[in-house]
Length: 314
Image 1: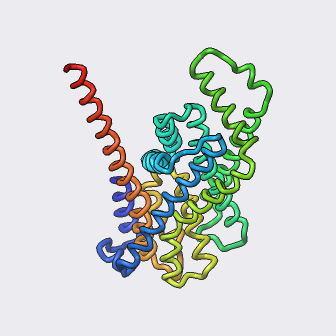
Image 2: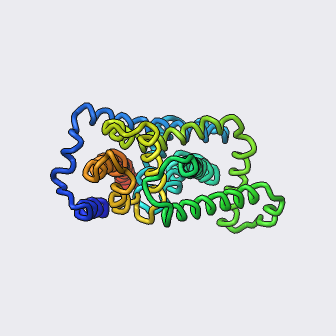
Image 3: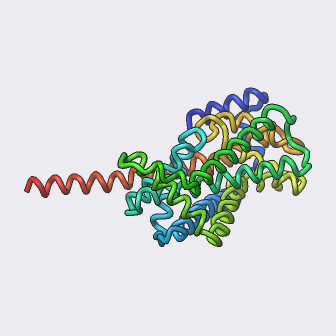
């Protein structure tokens, strides 16, 4: 969050904006607060639903509470690490704690992260090649998106080949790491082969999460009378861009880029203000929820441990 605050301050200085007056451009009201908070609630709803459907694909009927816990941990660690690197491991850990077999828990969590990455890149590619005038020159950023897209599809193809190749049998070993890796491949293979129609609601939930993350920016774009197509396209492209920034949760770089993504009739001051509100109700809000949840869980574990030690002493 410190990096985010630095990014906001730098973005304001870079555009010669008075930070104290920037947020005033939104005329933020309690109505705005509840609307944007509602977007956040639906993020948790569709993320939990995606975990639930992925669980069903493996024959696991995950309780809603477990899905919500996995989502909370996933979002927290995804925001705290560059490229959301620890999001899937955090979700898998929660599922494992809830008695889901480890390779299966990892496969479910990877299914969640993989589907989000897939829809994020797909949406970005569709917008880029749709003919819509982009808010930036087709230079370094565009080439970066091409590179990330190519790497993703190459990695996805490699994973699919590894899941189905008969040579996977040669990886059989008594070593824990190798056995775990093979178990993960077996579960991913099972998911791809047997999920069938369940992949439809999974991908629908994934698209809705992408859309809801961009909704605060869409809301203000429409509020500022931006042309309808652009009002939806730019925020979705901005979210796709921020997902691949090399800082935790895209901190600092996402804020600095605000004025580049949201052009006329939106002013630089309005662009920074709407990005600040968006980050506050997604990035920062979800970190706070995650930290509160972890302290709650760790608190219960700590109390249980003390009781156990006390009973042993008695």
